[in-house]
Amino acid sequence: MQLPFSDRSPMERTSPLGTLDSSTQGWINGFIGVVIFSGSLPATRLAVMEFDPVFLTMIRATLAALLGLCLLGVFKEKRPTRQQWAPLVIVALGVVIGFPLLTALALQYVTSAHSIVFIGLLPLATAVFGVLRGGERPRPVFWLFSVLGSLLVMGYAIAQGLSAAPAGDVLMLLAVLACGLGYAEGAKLSRNLGGWQVICWALVVSLPVVAPLSLLLAPSTLSGISLPAWLSLGYVALFSMLIGFVFWYRGLAQGGIAAVGQLQLLQPFFGLALAAGLLHEQVSLGMVLVTVAVIGCVAGAKKFAR
Image (cartoon, rainbow, N blue to C red; front, side, top):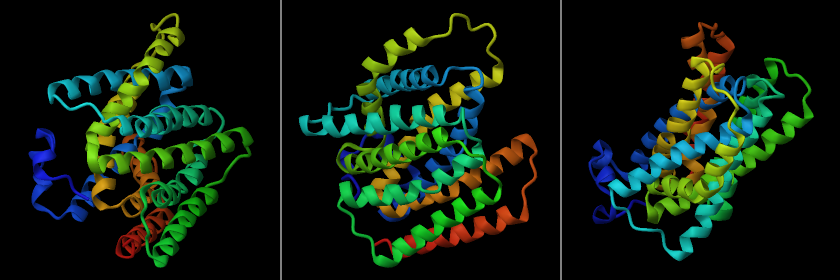
């Protein structure tokens, strides 16, 4: 569902995607969001090597919330209605605090390859919550492509070799559930409130909690923090916590929560490709073949989503 032209903010009215149909806009916006999110786990893993994971979660949310508050003020956005505050709290708990905190804690126990097993379940979790919270009803064939895509991603991760880490597994599973719920709830809100407005207001809702905790948990000295750690913090605060969600929530609202959510199947492979480009890691033929198969699953899910 697309917001009426008159109800959209200046940021959305000037979008170059405005001439495309709503579903196509949704897939393009969702794709941009997934590309941005692909750098989140590598950046988080790098940051938690020098920052406490709880502090990292709080400071990234605080920085993003302050910027979000500025955006809401600049564009003079209306306050959410009374009925919208409770869903915004769910979004804040799911994607502002829950997923970043749980993944940051989990990455102390598991490798990035191990985490891909659970990230592979995220599109399926998002689709399920899209049915439960968003009222969507994808066709039965959609679920076949969704499950197959998740199995391909998980199978690839398992083939890379995994180490037993029960604590990390539990944390990643909880992270996926929190994120799937936050995605579906945020997308449902975006239909009326607007995509970027949802994440900005969710960040503002979390500010009274995350800002004091950021000060309380701040390291005694910052002199030993390396430049890569600071850059990683900047990325997860600005891109993972704010800019990515601007595209992602709008994409989910336009193209459908269950359908566009399947783009997340590509996120692990974008992340691996990013690592290959920046860290000069080798890209195997197996990775290329699985990526092609996953793209096929995403295309199938798109075709049979409605």
